[in-house]
Image 1: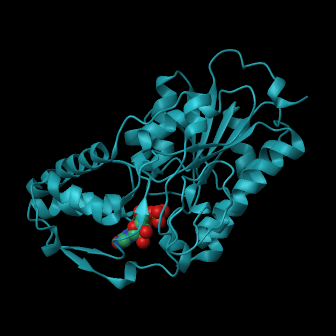
Image 2 (image 1 turned 30 degrees about the vertical axis):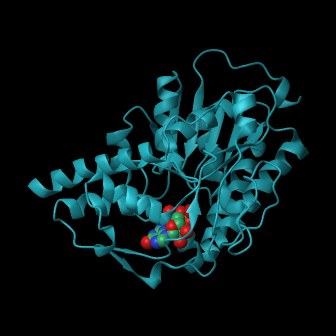
Length: 341
Ligand code: GDP
């Protein structure tokens, strides 16, 4: 039986999210909980120190231990959760880190996807468990310095420019392959950069918002950055998880790009963030540090989300300025708490 013909499950729906300690799973868990789902989150490793954060911030999540590198543990989690929907966010997701740790990035970000798909198949749930694969705009990459004439869409050619992008491209294609080979309900969401208050501080947006907040309160002197010229299509993660959920509710599994269609440089983000705290001479606080440069840079990313607009009725609500404001004000709150501590 093709999964696309299956009946919607009766009663409360259950979702299993891998990568529950990460940004997207956190936002999506909240969204699914509000939609009435039972939410299960897979957490890696024995005594993972981030487990306490998940228990504090997402107290409704049922935590299961498991690792996408260990197929058996994923199969066990799927059975335990009796998952109707499985969202695969587990990944080594930082481009810079992937250059220094390419092999483990391929294992987790690439082969991990295969293990998730195989776990669904080997548990005999290919007709019952829908799978979401977190694909990424980094798969497009592009040729150095070349500005794409139009936004990337679902059929744009892939040209990854990092071990992370290459591993994600493998994940994207193996997910599509399982859809085509086994008739599984597998969708890939090709998401452009999406940020917010849950973003890790190793990513440039959160690094900037946190530093700007701390500089404005005298807790930090300067901000060290690499290239300021690259351009990204930055949206708000909370908007993007709504699109992810919509993709999984359709009758037929298909891939979708989620993006704002607007592009800004790292420097634009820096200027806007400093402006939020009333600092105009941002240059006196920002220092260049070549250690943050990458072996190959993705110069320009912007997406064309027309298919998601038309088919899913999805639109992002937070614009660039709104995103920067949201992140800086969140980090100002944290910095104020740090200042009085
Ligand atoms: P990415 O688009 O997934 O690589 O997201 P990042 O937030 O890590 O990087 C976005 C852009 O910011 C890239 O072009 C980086 O080269 C650039 N960048 C400049 N300075 C930094 C820095 O200090 N940290 C990070 N993470 N990126 C930086």
